[in-house]
Image (cartoon, rainbow, N blue to C red; front, side, top):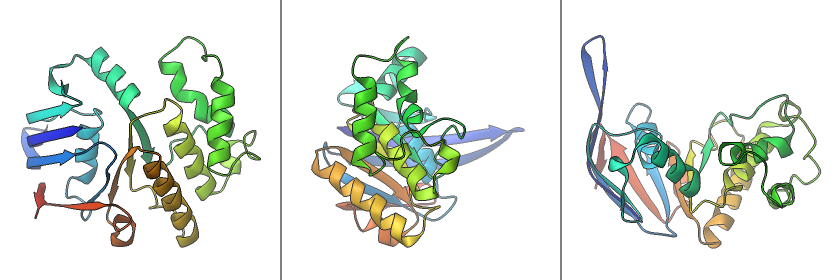
Length: 221
C-alpha cells in the first residue's frame, strides 16, 4: 500500500541546510498496524508528514496504492490526502468554542459546499463509537484531554480513510486515557484500517504489529 524508497528531506534556513531524513526506505501493507519509534529530533514527525502527503521530500520515491505521489500537483495531492488519510495529533487541534459534533464534521467542509446526506448521523455514530455520544453538544474546551483526543479520532474517521496517521497521540494523556485510546486504535485495526503511530513511548509502540526505529534520519534494523 505504501512504498517509500530512499526518501531524503532537507530544510534550508538562512543558507544553512539541515538534513532531517536520510535515505528512508519502508513498505507498509494494507491493514498493518505499524509504530515508528524514535527520540525527539530523529525525524519522526517529518516522516509522518511525508507519508501523509502534508510535505514533499527533497529526494526519493513514494507510491501510495500504485500512485506516484511526488508527481501530483497541489490540488491532486490535497484530494488524495483527504481521501486516504485520517490524522490524529498530540495537540488535538480542535476548535475550542465549537461543539464536539461540529469539530467531527469539520473535514467535510474541505470537500463539499454543504454536508452530504447523513453526515450528522455519521458523526454521531463515530462519537458514540469513542464513547462520547453524551458529549456531542459540549464545546471542545469543556472536555477533558482524553475526551478531546476521542473527538479528534472521530474527526479523523469522518471521511472513512484507509489509513490512520497518529503523531504522539497519547503524549498529553495520563495512563488510563492512554490505555483507552490504544484500545480504540486496536478496534480500528480489527476493522481493517491501516494504523501508523509515531511515538517515542515503547509501551505505546508495543501495541503495533511491527515497530520501525528511526535514528538520525534513517530506519535502523
